[in-house]
Image (cartoon, rainbow, N blue to C red; front, side, top):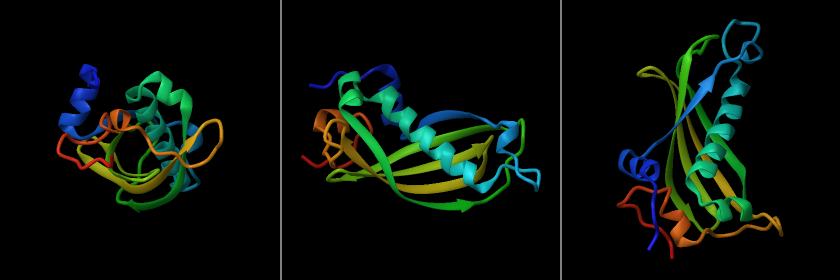
Length: 148
């Protein structure tokens, strides 16, 4: 049986991991808003933070994640001093691949939505690795189908 923290239970119930983002002066481009490339940096930080906070320490030490693809839809510009949150939702797993949606919000406004595919790697061999079921269940909604 897997023991879950209160934070993990809340993530499973709400379906999202909330990652606060600080908009910094060097995130701003010549047009006065956050540069498009910065959103991908935020997604990387948010997904990795999700992994490091929810996975057990031994799983974090034994696995790495690399992004395979991102599909991003920009909806509104973000500006310096905006209070921005990245909500990360683990959608599903297929072998060593995990599919995430990250919704970047300013208050209730969606600034960007990103669909990403990530690959889990064994930290020692750097080869694709499947997560153990007891680790994977920490990231997916209670009704999600998790491969055995």
